[in-house]
Image 1 (tube, rainbow, N blue to C red):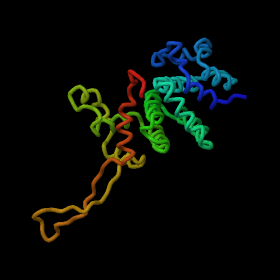
Image 2 (tube, rainbow, N blue to C red; image 1 turned 45 degrees about the vertical axis):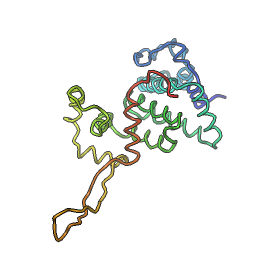
Image 3 (cartoon, one colour; image 1 turned 90 degrees about the vertical axis):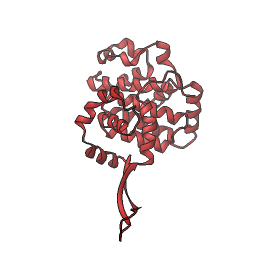
Image 4 (tube, rainbow, N blue to C red; image 1 turned 90 degrees about the horizontal axis):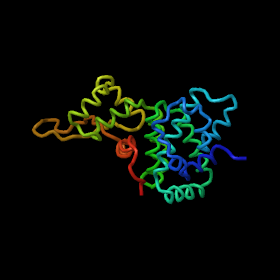
Amino acid sequence: MKDINEELEKALKGDELKNIGIDVTEIALDQLFNDGILKDIPILNYAVALLKGGINIRDAIFLRKLLIFINNIQEVSNSKREEFLKKISKISNTKKRLFEKILFTIDKIDDSEKALLLGKVFKHLIVGNIDLIQYYRISRVIENMMLDEINYFFYLHGYYEHNAETREKYFYYMELIEESNLIATLIKNDLYEIKEELTYRENIRPQQYKMEKKGGLTNLGRVFCEFGFESRFYLTKPIE
């Protein structure tokens, strides 16, 4: 008997969304209650079959996030996807654990844009820009942080051009989120760290050396910024 992991693997390998020509960003929740669209997408049809009582609002939201995630993955070339799936299939329980983690995270995340973000980060896992542990850690960050916090994090650390247009666009992040609270959240999610460093102070005697606290991004924070910022947008062509 098939299981949801098998259907997910088929969806990650296949090109159903390209072939059907569906723009998942335009799909409204009420369309997911329509049997026609579900029958055209095997993994959604299978997922609905598991919901013997029918689809409710939460189910429809999950299906839409899953569609957005899969649509991202299908932008990667078939050869890269198949190579990745073969590689993780050789490692005991790795593929099963990864697929279960994907479904769990998609279910838990509270915004469709996070599904877009997660899908882009997963694409970088497929092509080898990040490793499996980094993917798990970043997916946990996406799950735990508010989307507004993530956007403000990208803004603060230079991954938007600081011009009048972006300042106006992201002004409400700065109004709503206190930087001190954000830093505490970033530290909790291992994106930011505070270190004590011994600094030399010229012309100050007798204590020319002093321990000072300095903050900065962790390795995970830098990776999340680099790939996470790009993840907010669909690519115009597959990652090679």
